[in-house]
Length: 495
Image 1 (cartoon, one colour):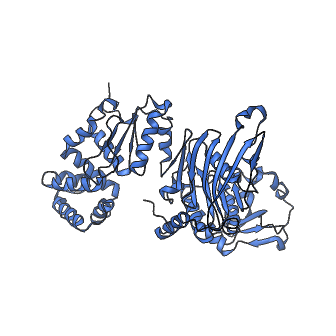
Image 2: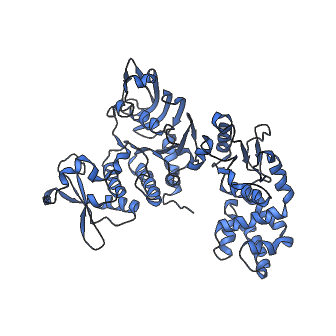
């Protein structure tokens, strides 16, 4: 299970900072009245590090570009170039902004507009330091023209232009890459701050040039060095943050961006196709662009394909969280004749998201032959709607309900639970005693199964959950049937 190295107090402090608009410069909201496939959509930046997710061609770069062009040093044509009569649709594009710039207005936000009229962009841009990193950052140096001058076996670098990586940079980069770069060096010919060339040292002490770096290594060193050199209240834009990085490095990069937001008041917006990039972020920091609509909340990247219709599933089920997904899967697997491989179940971090995505999937014309249902938790404040196929799990808190329901049937099912927990039948009474102890001491229902696993010899939490769900399905078949009967006619079955 992922454990962030960013403290909860840091996350909460940044949320409060954005809510109170306690910045010298900050992009608060972007209103996309009409830009490419996005019309009348609004994105708010409620956390200083924002992830934009979506399917290919969904509008992620449109949001990045729209966020950038209100600032003077980013020319609109960098993101929205016009290709002659192929782009006649650009007429009357318009983007509105709500921003903070304390050099202009001390106690309130500022409104600005950028639009494309009469074959040109019209805007009243603000001053702000903006760094934008495109996908080309991970192109190998040997394929970039700017490195051709270094591809020479006779070249010798003067010691005066060779500099060590600073301790601050080395520490930040080392955490992201998971390696010691204290012996790495960079070449800089000017005072602009830009790194011209890099060299590294392996564990054997052998030196090598940037031509032999991994693409991810080179891009991270350059990105972090530029970000650390930024003044406070700057804006960083990153396309496909996971490019060239393995999953752990992707997580560490996002954690770094949260840290630099806390230290230096840096605002970052990045696009991604990676679930790992979302793990360190609070729900409000994640936006999905789906068939021309924007949705806020922590969605699974794979879920986007189901929502946008890019799936072969015969039935899509939206639920609140991974435990609800496990519960529904266990019920379906306990029934005979169901074709499980044609059913997709997507946890969507909350009842609001689950219902929004279900409703969007239902009205999407590309998904009419792939019905969906939404199953909310028993303690959800959302309303059941049979007509719209929105149903409710039994009980209140799902974890508490399953735990207590199984505990009530221990006399009949303790041997089966012991087997499901990979324990001997002789351990059944001991397990029952542990369950009662956990019930009496537990203060957070989300920790019930991990606490049981801990007391049973460090059993994995998911194994414990599945054991309880297996027993529940055997002990309460009528409750399971009552839930499934609501949409039984939609469930694909063997012929």
